[in-house]
Image 1 (cartoon, rainbow, N blue to C red):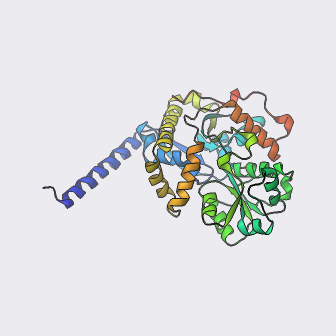
Image 2 (cartoon, helix red, strand yellow):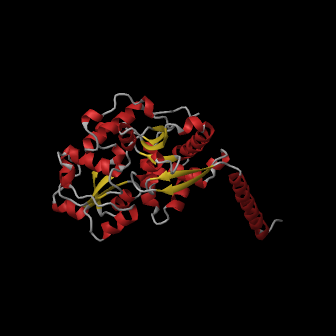
Length: 337
């Protein structure tokens, strides 16, 4: 009979061997860096690709770092990193300014950024959560709404939501903070709302302290659907010179996306490791929203890029005459096998 102690030792030995094998394979693999604009549940597939060694299995060692907001796009432009997860609005703005970037994949088909207002503010203003978005957005005027960075996707979403009510960008105060700082400011009532992703919006919905002004799960503002987000962004000259690396990167990403859309249990287990402070209810809400928004397989739709351009214009980031006429140069789906 195998004793419990012997079985436990065998399991630990096997786990150790697997870790050692992964480490050995990583040592022999090309190393690249991926920049993320923040820490949020929208990037779960990327976390899975790293944590489950799916990139290592492809023969690629990917290190992830966080560069807040639109800084990730700048990092690709200046060559600091080969890969970044950006947004369509940042991609098109860069192209208009002569910085030729490309999208080789799009992880989600909605912005996944919620605009939230504190419940006490909503109640004092007699806010109607069932009113049309143009009416709901009126509550934003004159408010202090936190974002993760100027020119970031949360900023674009906030300003485009405000535009639904005819509110000018200058009529909202937008302090920039990282997500943990946003949540701390929310608790102390230093801010009246925020524009941010999962699980932060789900946390304030679950605890009853926040009310949605716009619902990303519904794709609001819906006039910009579909819109490409969680875009794998590279310099236009990078993948033609490193085709094998780009293919391996996308293969690992696609394998992780498949887990997200087909295996709730595994995805939730890994989400809990990345977001240990959030309970099952909050992460479950976040998972459900993410599964409904996953763009699997992650082929980039020109219309989804164009809608990002239209959001740029609504947010005041681009002039109408700067809108691109052809989005094909911004897209390369050839690394999605």
